Image 1: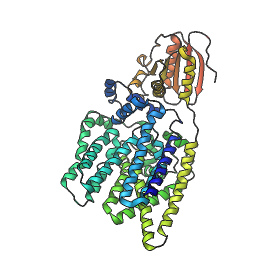
Image 2 (image 1 turned 180 degrees about the horizontal axis):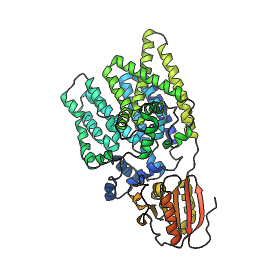
Image 3 (image 1 turned 135 degrees about the vertical axis):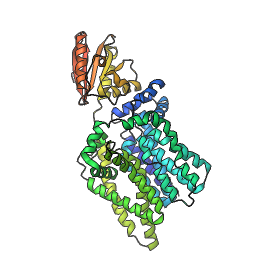
Length: 513
């Protein structure tokens, strides 16, 4: 027991180190900056924002409370996901131990600790890590209720089940299907249990009616549709399998993970090895408890299968490398199950055979994952927002305001929230103040889209992001500033950000590069 505790502690330490290594390695990207934006709005503004914001509120409220204590810098806001990710590893280890003993628990914990998607989402300031934790905790309490019949487990399950869709809509693709499958395999199939497995979801109905349905009915975002039409249903499933396998060439919207794995020489063997381990796990669990295998299969497949089905129905919602994070705990449990079953079979036969084969496959997959993790952790990227903020601090009172165009607004505002300078950061167009991540870029630019300078003493900074589709707004704002008598005194490019400094007088202390 002591050895098991020490090994689990070592796994958790490794999981923490793998996540901490990148927690401050990049600027907050657009979606993370949007998280800070919503978490720091006034209560009335936050409520109104959900007319446009597609994600439900619980993550933003949790981040609001978290930031009230730790602040809203990159490390602080990402640490909420870090803690959720580590707690999920602990829960998966406990689930595996109850079913498959120490060997299964340690292998399952190790898989989840090292999985590239687990590391990536474990330091992203978005709802995915927290939603995965809530789903895993709900299933853990449901199993405890079915086995021990303690009222506190039923209450905890009901609360977690009710909360899950308020963290992320896609949890509805996991619950209540997994609890229902576990109920079917329980010794006592009480009707009251069946109601308990479903009824707490009614708590989500008011939000779904008020906000959710309008987002479901809305047109799919073009960028999601582009990836769906690129891969199609079979290709999407293949990309998901590769994402879970850990050696994939990840899509560009996964940032540094995509940059690091471009080329991904071990993608095919890693996918095949991990797929073999998952299949072996399903067989091992199915021989002992068929309905448990059904529950794990649902947990593994549904987060991908249902988005694919919805996309086939005409509303693309599926993108590879994102919703698979909800299936990671099930994948880890299955790998733990096949390892434990092989070990037990070898012990019963008195020789090392099946366990050796599983160990070889597991080590092969581990090598592919180690390559992915190593390249991901060692990939250096520019931090343009941090560099721009450094220049702004050198300017001091010389900067009157920052006009941030398009997708540059949310990261610049988040940086100001984390370390206030008192310099106003205003969006171009102003509609981005309501939802910094979405905007109808096809509509014509009108005068209301172009803020007039506040008239404060100092330079006006116009910051834009290259290639975000807001070039027309940038050009129109440039013309308005020129009409106000301001002239570009310096233009600087840092990464994908572009800074133009508008002054009324000659001379500017900013460097040329």
